[in-house]
Amino acid sequence: MLVSGSNFLLGILLARQLGVESYGQFALLWLIVLFFSSLQLAYIISPMLTLGSKKSFLVLERYLSVMLYLQVLFSFLLMIGLYAFFEIAPSINEKWNIGDLKIYVIFTTLFFLSQDFLRRYFIIKTNYFKLILIDSIAYLGQLLIIAYFMYMNNLGLNTAFLSISVSFLLSLLIGYMQVSRVSTAIKYKRLIFLKNWKFSKWLVYSAILQWGSGNFFILVGGAILGSWSVGVIRVMQNTMGIFHVLFIALENILPINFAKIYRKNGYKSMMDYFKTQIKYGLIVFSILAVLVYEFAPNIIEFIYGSEYTQYSYLLVGFVGIYLFIYITMLQRYILRTIEMTKMIFISYVVTTTFSFLSSYPLIEYFKIDGILIGMFMIQLIMVGIFYQYIMKNRLKYV
Image (tube, rainbow, N blue to C red; front, side, top):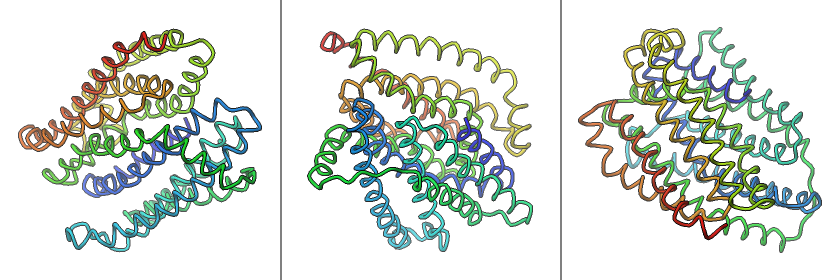
């Protein structure tokens, strides 16, 4: 609640203060943060939440110490990779030269991902006080610093990224002081590394493809229509912030619940739990669809101002997109629990291929509506692929 609420307010402040063009540029650069975040989620956080929940207390302490070691290694490689990218990028396309802004983006990405690891660390140890502490420093802190720069009439892209990086660095430093460490042998570290890779290799491949398929329409839209289109799409996504609250909460809870139910009661009980979650989702999204259909222009103008009102109709489409995101999220929990993550990878191969083939004609013909249509089709394709596999192989796991 704290995380998504803060991000929701941050999106409002930046969209209002930076304007649609600069906010679109911020959103494009933030895609870099999201790319590395998806890699971290696939290789480090997902196995930590799923495999860690199956371990006893004593084994868990050793396991989490190794995961901390892997996180530090990942952060080091991240800095090298991002710096190399920003150095090489201008030689490929001069428009990719972002100057001094690259330093802010690199450190924002580093501190954001490291703090996110600590969040999941405290969740799996059920230490919610420490979780709330570091989240308050990071997410409320960024709002306070942003508000300061607004007051000083000095809010731009540089100071926006500076605000985020400073608040997350403070949270990270305080969080690491609360982490317990257990010495582990190199052999054990290697064992966990291989176990993680076996579990998540398809998730890592999928994360790369997911970032491409999910954001390719936005990137192509920015190239064809301009960065303003990215700002508009991001505003619509930010308005759906209530579901970011829901999805983040579910990502921290449901993978563990699916794994525990499957381990204790078997596949059928897990599927019953899945169907129950689907029913809850349909009720919530049906109510929201009616409200958005009636009041979308009023909602957008009240939150972001008249600059974005002409695109408020897109919000109705995003309700449908988020319904299918919710369904695919639940389907992925099933596949991860039965350790069939290869199917997630296959689904992203299909949707990435679809994105590459259809993004240009859809956006060229339908303009900004083409971005919405493409994003909706991606989720619909994924639901169909997951459903077909789960139904085809359900007897194998009973």
